[in-house]
Length: 229
Length: 229
Image (tube, rainbow over all chains, first blue to last red; front, side, top):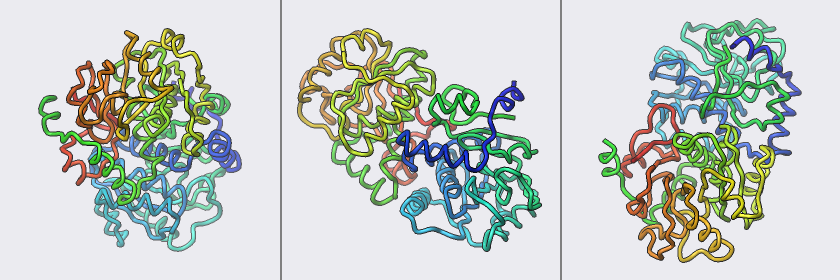
């Protein structure tokens, strides 16, 4: 059954993923705030399905992947997790500033010392880079990635394991091996190289015609996420 | 236990409800699109908890209560309900136009003949007016309210039964008696006069300090809604 689900899903290349995002907004009328809210909610719900209520550190990147992480942080706090953010490069766009203020309202601390924060966590969320990323992470994210590769705490990657090529996977040999991958909207080609324990799909907002063309599975009940394997 | 939950909740007057909305956005950095998405999601999840997958007609008003209804319609479609909208006055604001376009992407029809649509439905959602409403519904909503009062199909009211006073309840004697009331953010004073079967609370986005001051209960697990009675 689970193999069956994966077999039917069309894995997306980088351009196809970008085109779908454009379609959702320009053609179907979604606001970025809606898509990010539902994506981040599904990240939090996936984590809650597999990891006991404990301490979660979210490493937040400078773009939309980081935005998904900020939303997930807030929902994890609502679910009773003890949440902290590592957010070394905070963009000034209203979208991200608003998401960070929401985290402040939930008394989620922003930590400065990554090594200590990793030591103090049970699960670490990699929300650094998503499907728009290409090349190799630059400072300060190169160091963040090194730290994520150097811990034996479980890593949860949002949409794409950071540093991996969106299509070719870990071509650069970063060595990042997440325990969980949460694909958003639809899995990207690099998901074929994911060997961790839990592969989830989230972002339950895809219109039926688009979902059929991508071979997406039916989500169960009212859940915002579905386990693929 | 359930009595206990209700006893601790502070029922909001109209001004207090408006002040909380302002606080969530101006002080805590939420965008209206986020709050509406989470509110509408909780409306859909509440309905899915009590009514079998069937035909749902959503009657949509011209303001934010209608916006919550449009979001709920989309999520109900994702849950497998057969959904239709009655939406007699469609505002031109980008927010509402976007939400309607999303419904179009989900192939949700907008019906014109209310009496026929009510006959064809198993459940009817009253998303006409919320906590900003005062006075008596004007045309064309006076007729919509009459139709909702004249059916024996179950009515689900979003936040405030339409035509009721936000604080005093059905002072004007509209006669609307919803089967379900879904309070959003926190119940309003009129909820004290609700005698239907199901009272839910949704809108799981309230920061902890505000939630404590309102006496809100803890939501279970990852649910976006909680049954109050």
